[in-house]
Length: 244
Image 1 (tube, rainbow, N blue to C red):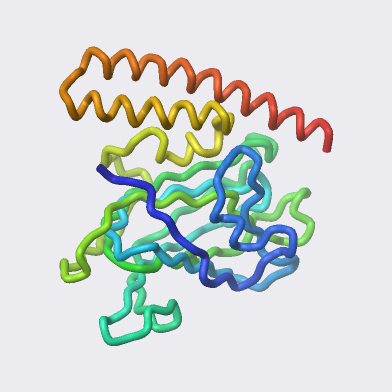
Image 2 (image 1 turned 90 degrees about the vertical axis):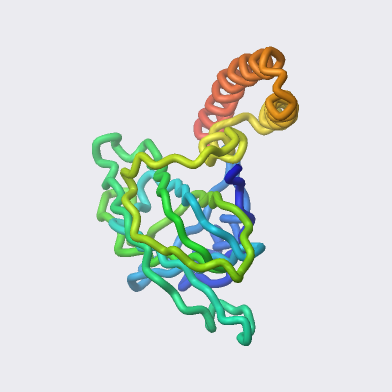
């Protein structure tokens, strides 16, 4: 099954002191993510290094509600076996790009979540982030990404690379656990999320054992907790915004 890929941000063109790139190592309802520096030049770049050599299957990205890039390009990177594994030594292959909404329609209150299907092998993912949309809230022409989630599989580096361009509207789907999805991480009450993860592990074991009756009961319980967790997280976010 496709799983969450751990990563480290190893390069950023710039960052705001209150929102450094390593904020992207964390996910949850209350994270602030990365922001470029004020009045920065474009394009901006972020480079993520995976924990292992992987076949990347999906990239999920949550944009800021008003510090919005007009376009983001994605490139997969790899190093030859006789080179030091550093992003400076990597050779990158362009995968494609996405365009983000200006968010005027929601009056800059909603955050856009993109889920992009890919099929590429490598050690690095580079994001080339283009100039921001202009709006009355973005006084310093910044861009921001609240969260990034990577999904894929560890592979043997001797496997051939099969990089292909992608379409963000593709209807291809690789099965993933609900607890690995970015929406789960960002819109769930943290304490409820822990309970759901434990139940999901038990459900997967029942499926493995072909005890589908018990698996179905756990699935129903998980869905009920998902609804509760989303309401609690939304309430807490609204409360924090009111205090601010």
